[in-house]
Amino acid sequence: MGGQPWHGLACGLADSPVMELKWTRKAMSDPARLFALLAPVNKLAAARAVQALAAAPLRLLEQPRIGERLFEFEPREVRRILVGRYEIRYAIDTTTITVLRLWHTRENR
Image 1 (cartoon, rainbow, N blue to C red):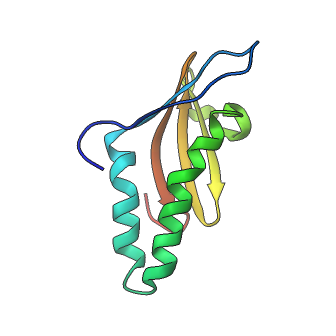
Image 2 (cartoon, rainbow, N blue to C red; image 1 turned 120 degrees about the vertical axis):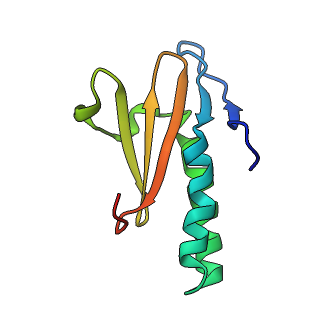
């Protein structure tokens, strides 16, 4: 995954702005951390979970506000989506969706 934030672009609809997808450094390291946590129990399940977590934020490019709003972070617009037993937190501004962190819902954080 490297040291630079990952950037993904999506085409917006004619009447909506084009959104850019970015990952923070911590979010970029979370899939590897989760894989290391899960792999000793079941490597195949761990790989599937990581793949699902990597793909899920791409859906946000079409529907950025689909996630639950976390009002404790105001004035920032921070939201969360659940992907199976995992939580993805992300922030939205005018043109950017930033993936902040990924967790297993049973993790202490």
